[in-house]
Length: 120
View 1: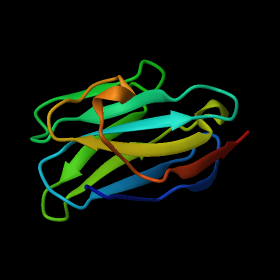
View 2: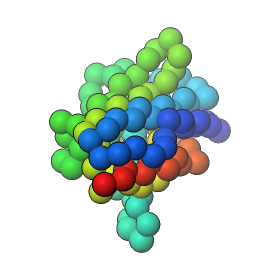
View 3: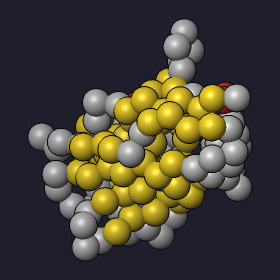
View 4: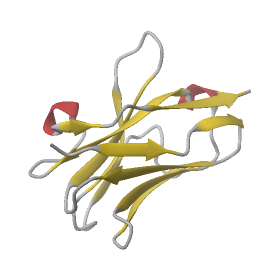
């Protein structure tokens, strides 16, 4: 069982920045970030492979969000810049040893989720 600990959410004004962190309890997992707004389905935000050789982004965040990982601390970061009110959601990181991508079904392990609120 892999546990994921997320941090870094909060309230920010439109145009501001936040950095989310996700720390898996084990190393060498593919990681994805997803978000879910109230009354809406969960959507892919960004993903990164275990070796960081590949990344992927949703069109809605491309150019504003950056996913990266720090090997020394085994942390995956989601740097979110130029935030918009429509980015408001609960953000969750997910991990899998074998698969990664935009489909949440690719991931076996999920964090609890963290609230991000962007005010106008």
